Length: 439
Image (cartoon, rainbow, N blue to C red; front, side, top):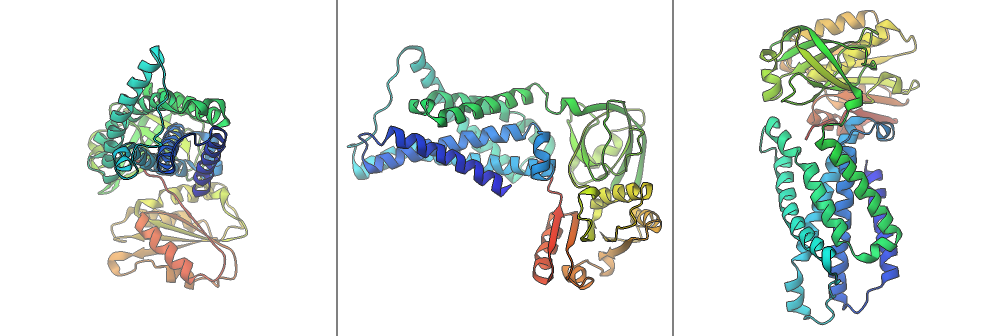
């Protein structure tokens, strides 16, 4: 992700430098030239990154493989939006810095505004006013999103206004970009980004994102294996393309609530039946058992994600770590392995739970692993003082061979293990972790 974003920003800066080298500084003094060009560069980076964020929001399948899964596409969408807003804020601050520069350096050498007449002049005035309002709204929306000031069900509606806000800011950028941009490669690049972003925004506003990967179905069973876990089994229509163990899907039980991402907790048996294990982590998931019923219609979009067993390095030692409901993809893995055993697979599955006695997944895991001699199951009961540490994982292996850690669980737990393993591990280690977050 970092390489992709760095390359994207570098491409924009190179194109900007190329356009600037052709147009020159003109009659501007150095302080005014710095302010003017920094203002335009920040605006260019802001709208370009917003355009990329809009494209990423359409869940482009062609980016799943290079980025490592749709969870990472979403993570890049989030950080692209944060960068875009940061540059937009700098763009706004630089615009308001005129009085400060004038008080220090005077008006001499201040750049002249481009002169237009007729309809173009009126459109530029409108674009300027809309852009100022748009930046205020954008900053407010991002603060609400990052600080999680509202529950998801309210935040989702606020977030749905982003495409409309993007179209306003895209109009602002197209009208107010320096005219010499459009005769340079920078203009072509900016035009492509604005068109792509606008197309993505319209798709979002019309509810077309993911439409080609949606399948309708029916809830065939509901169970509560634990007090805060709901197991939902859905039978989907022939349009469902099947899935690979470890993937997730967006599930919609109520059209007014929208889609929510859940890992598919079952292997694909070819019968278009999928199981979801849903933990009560928020208002929506806590209320879910009382809002759904057997026979109820459901829409499932997907599958997405690359947290898949075939992606493992067959020559590397496998360590699988799950925390709480993070055991879900590994249950699907184990079911897939039982259907098609892999004699060469040797793996250690570590499951961390708060209370082993009351955990419904413990016996289920024991049953699944009983038929898989290559998979060694380790249960860690934190209530009994059995918290899993990086030192425990490192001590069980000689560190002389390549090792892969596949992790699914709380982010804080993953960070703790990753840092500890980096310090303790002597051999080559690769750490795979799902990074999916809705906000």
